[in-house]
Length: 369
Image (cartoon, rainbow, N blue to C red; front, side, top):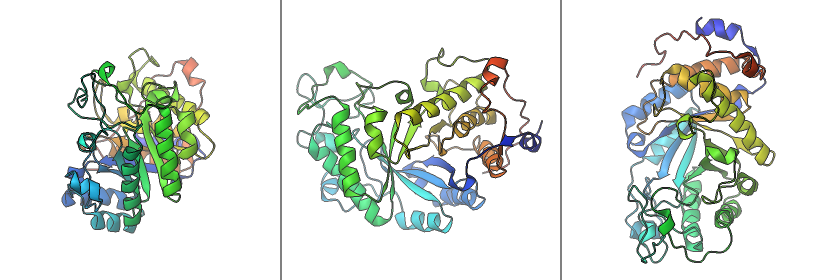
């Protein structure tokens, strides 16, 4: 069965295709590679994607644009990878949203400044298993530094923000962490920071990248609780990667349906925990970790579950920015939505009928790089 035959069998679907966020992650090294970005923008010209989430504050704390923030320059944290004028000009010409990914509390630069970093039981800077230091969310100055970055970005024309690592660490010798200025449970300083962001840049779109399990449980050690975050957010980006859930979680008749139900049920669960109006835009696993068969169908199953659960879009994550496997599933899902039709997958009775992975005969990728 080919793509067009499947579309013909679709049931009517109510989501507005113009509002469906269709995004990919861009790392700073590809973000400054104009040849690569020209090809990305060509995909936007086709209507395939309409959002790019790009590192503006990276995984180790450096800023990837020409920041003028005094403290960032003092710390040597300004790297100037991105040509912001090029990105904003090309994005605006294609009505593409640029989302600034801001890594919050994982920061090798700020953690070494004064006493702002987490300490171990010997009073030394604590490092996670990757050798990266973390700042202490209970210290107000840490949040103020992040606020200054967002303020600057909004003035430069980047008005959509996605906070990542907006939590306490989970990897490494976390039992050795000794926090100072502790005042209440771990979600409280994060909520206080989000409130400050909301007050400072009220017109910006504020989002948070959260663990997928937040849709199911309160993550008290990490400080991520959706009911607490929600009132200060416009969107959440849950990381629902199937590889990050235990093998027994949502065990199904096939990998396709396991992926589908992880996304469908998690998106529905997230909506129940959030105030009305907060969007849910999940990250899609665009990498092969622990996948039995990493192919077009693997991506499609996640997109299917997300859109069927009324997610307002999706962001595909591949750290190396290789999206060769992703373009065709995006095309299929978007064109299904454009046709105001989607397969009968939203019929939850299929779980009892034992449907197998759909017979999708994907031709070679429609989108060559």
